[in-house]
Amino acid sequence: MARNVVVTGGGTGIGYEVARRFAEAGERVVIVGRRRAVLEQAAADLGPRVTPLVCDLADPDAVEHAIGGLPARIDVLVNNAGSRETVIGAGPHALLARWRGDFERNVLTVVLLTESVRDRLAQGSGRVVTVSSIAALRGAGSYGAAKASLHAWNNFLAAQLGPSGITANIVAPGTVAGTEFFGPRLDEAEVSRRAARTLLGRIGETGEVAAAVHFLASPEAGFITGEILHCNGGELLGR
Image (cartoon, rainbow, N blue to C red; front, side, top):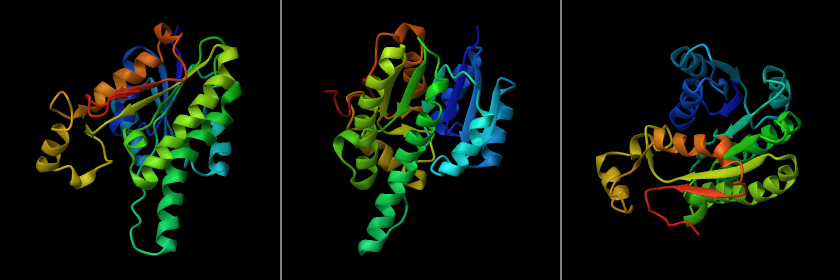
């Protein structure tokens, strides 16, 4: 029986690959994001099992409005939407904008939606998988702090959902090619530098992170919850 899967940030990069993997497995997928054209193109590319839903997940009014477009029963929720705040400059105002922006884009986008659909998560088999970052563990200013807060929140969520047979886990990628996150910064020299920090001598691919997400969302992962699955090629060893 096909499951209902919701993937945030599903229009590009890791989210796109996650949506593709679920759709190819025969699941019904809703991809959520802010950019209508990007989402609609992704849905068209991925096929009829994928439906786009436009929503700014950091806006509580937008989330409330979008709830009606989500399935009444959600078997898998993949919290992938997030980005790094690009505000630069000196002084407390720029600092506040950077920290607030990273919190809104990486924490509120996850928490507002998850809490809003908690009563729709499939009892006894539901899965919540949140995409974090290696930055949460090695430190990276406001972005790393925002992602690290998701780890603490996931511990709370796993405890809350556990009695209902619903799992909540984190996937924490390292450097991954094929995303919009790094932009032009990820040139050949930077790829080589980052690859040298891993035990495998290379950076990751979006499909490899999607595979980790897919596993944690599978029936076989039903006894795994409150965990962080590192997907970084050994750049930072789990603990």
